[in-house]
Length: 445
Image (tube, rainbow, N blue to C red; front, side, top):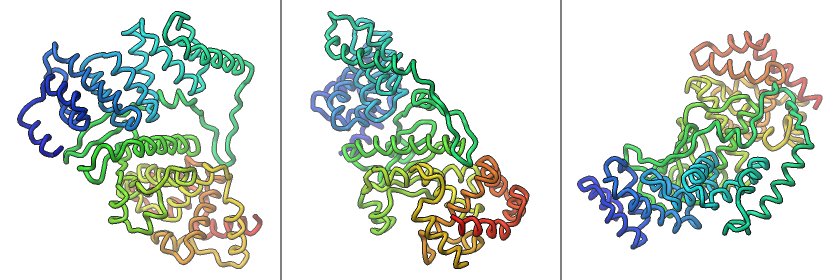
């Protein structure tokens, strides 16, 4: 049905009456598809408010169960007219999908255009309080008077915001550098948001729905998937990967600058293309310039750490000018493993891994790093040991040379310089000499 509708729209532009009819029948998918690619200038000025109201109805209708689609409809509504319901609904949907920069912009637009509507101040204050900007929350919530319909909700929030602002004035934050990594400026949650771009919806050359910002571009492996199949999961994946990007910035001082493609597979698609074993054991993986997400995986604490690991591979690929195949596998996997360790709170190899590595080192049975330069670690006889040994090797490199030196190595090797020469130049010893030092350190752990 959607394919037939899309074909029809190629030959006949939708009208305001079409939008109102689809909204009356609650045909939200069709409504979005009909207007997704329509430019504002193509609609008569007198009809734009009608189109906006119809799209806003879809946003409100879907906001409870499909925040991603609600936001898409709301964004399009706001593009046609600054409708109060569209602005408010879009902002709430943006908060639910953790697009907080966009949410704040929508709410501030609402405060400006609809100065007498205290719902915008209420939602803005609520969001700022949740983001630990107590002073900003007080500024917004204090403007809601006792005669306002929003006052009942605003009063307890204002009380909490004032208490938080008072407490914050009495505490001076102290930054502590993690061992082995230079201290880099840490952004607050709001500052981190303000340095990113909000998500925008679109359609790719093959008709697939896309959603992306400056850092991530989400699309579905199957462009024909129903909109209702994706909402909550897509929002959680967005939040998980934004956290991975923040972790990379915090621990390495860099994140991926070019957009990272994120391909969302359904459960059956992931099994079909990557096997049942992978579907039951991984949340996703990085391959061919894209993070491929497994829809069977829950975004829990463990899988969040896995996504941090995979995001690091995307960073390494970019650092190596998208020639990460020239970087030894142990070094690529080792950095991702080290970041994953740090993300979950371990300075180096966790206790169980450290004990296993110490035992192998004392027996002289550690695998040679040169043997892990091209071979996938998962295919080795003891994959867990291979990953942990790689992580320990990178841990030592970071302690002796820092993150900037390692990232510089990736850049040089990606440009075609021979690894052994670059390694010796940057670390002052050959790889075999480094391995001897690493084995000695692991024996004493």
